[in-house]
Amino acid sequence: MLLALSPAWARAQAPASPSDSSVSVPAPAPTPVPVVTDSTGAFPNPGVGEQVYPPATPPAPHGKVESHLVRTAEERDRFEIGAARPNEFFDVIGTIGYRRFLRYGGPFEQSMQFEIAGTGKDYLAEGSAGVYYLLRPIKSYKEEWKIRPLIEAGPGGHLTVQVASIEGFNDQTFHAKAFLKAHLYAGAEFLLSRKWGFLVRGRLTAPEHKPFDYAQAAILLR
Amino acid sequence: MLAVAGCSADGIHDPQNFFPGSQPTSWDSCDKFGATTDQIEICASIGLEPGEPSPSYNINFALPNAAHVLIAVFDSHAARIKILLNDDEPATLPGQFRNPPIIWNFTDEQGKPVPAGHYRVYFQSGDFTSTSDVETP
Image (cartoon, rainbow over all chains, first blue to last red; front, side, top):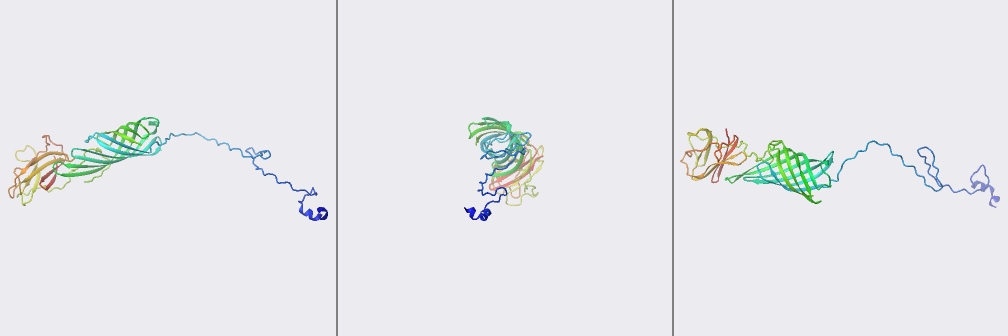
C-alpha cells in the first residue's frame, strides 16, 4: 500500500541494489571475526561463534643455559662474642664482632666484619677496632650442614690503642697505631640452632713476624 | 703520642713503641760549676766512670731538700727494666751534685745486658717528675 502510494519515496529509502529492485530488510551485520593468518599464511577457518587466537610464537632457538649456585643468604647479620689467644705479648683477648653479608660474587660470598677487642696484661692495656672484607668460597660448605668448615680470607684494617702504666711513677702514656693486614682464617662453625652456635678458628696474617697470630673461639648469634 | 702507619710487620697486639727516642730532655749536660739553683737539677751523660769497666749512663742530681727519690729505666714498650734508685736521699750540699752519681750500666734487674735500642729514664721526687731518653750503644 505504501509502495503503491509513494513508490518514489520508497525507492529513495531502500538501499540501492542493481540486481534486485524489490524491497528487502537489511540482514544483521555478521559478528566480526578477527582475520589472522598463521605463520603459513593460511587463513584460519573458524567455526561459528568460535574465538580465534593466534598460535603461540615458537620459542627462538637458544644456546647454552648457565646456572649459578646462589644461596639465600640465610644469615644477613650475625654477632660473635668470643675470646682469642694471640701469639704475642697478651694472654687472652676479648672480642665482639658483627658480620654483615654483602653479596655473592663469583665463587665467593662476601662479607664485612667489624670487630672490637680488649685486653690487658701487667702494665699494658689495649683496645682495638678492626674492619675486615672477607671472601668465603661458596662451595666450601652446604647450607644443610650443621658443622661447616670455615675458610675465608681478605684484608683487614686495624686501629690499636695501648695505654701503658709507668710502674711506680703514677703516670700513663698511650700510643695508637693503624695496621693494614691480609688475613686467612681457617676453622669450623658448629650451628646448634637457627639462632646460635659457636666457632673456632685460627688466623694467618701477613705481613707479620708471627704469621700464625691468633686463635679464637666465639659464640654466634644469628 | 699518636702515630699512624701503613703496612708494618709489627704485630697487631704486640706492645707498641711508646718511646721512640725523640723525647727532648733537659738532662743533656751538667754545668761544670755544679748545681746553681735551689731547685732539683738533673743531668746525665754516657761516659766511663772511674772504676767502671765499660761506659754507662751516669745520672747526677742536686736535691735542695731531703726527699724520696725514685729513678727507673723503661724500655721502648714502657716495660720497666730496672730500678736504679728508690730511697730517701739527703739534701745535697749547696752547689753540688750527689756523689757518687747514679749509674746505669745498661743491664736489667737480673744483671743481663739490655738489647741496643731506645730507653727512657724516669726521675721522681715528690711532685717533681722528669724523664730522659737514652739510646744504648
